[in-house]
Image (tube, rainbow, N blue to C red):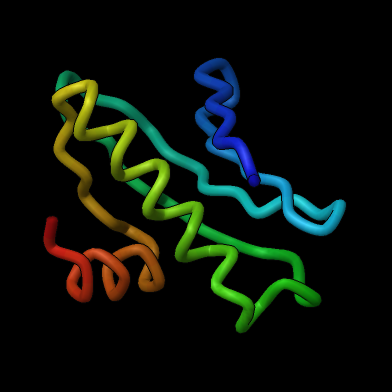
Length: 84
């Protein structure tokens, strides 16, 4: 199973699958997390890797009481499909 990593110094969440890393760049301001960019390596695209990353980082943000504001189009679409 893949494990979510958060690197606050870089403003980046990461998850590894099949030896490759999907990531999400973010910025924090008070209790708001701005998701600037979400990306998976080309071989992982279409496999659900970015969605698994979004699910894990959303759960982490929820646990920390953060509101997510998507800047990235993918993040915005994912959040619309997964309102919880």
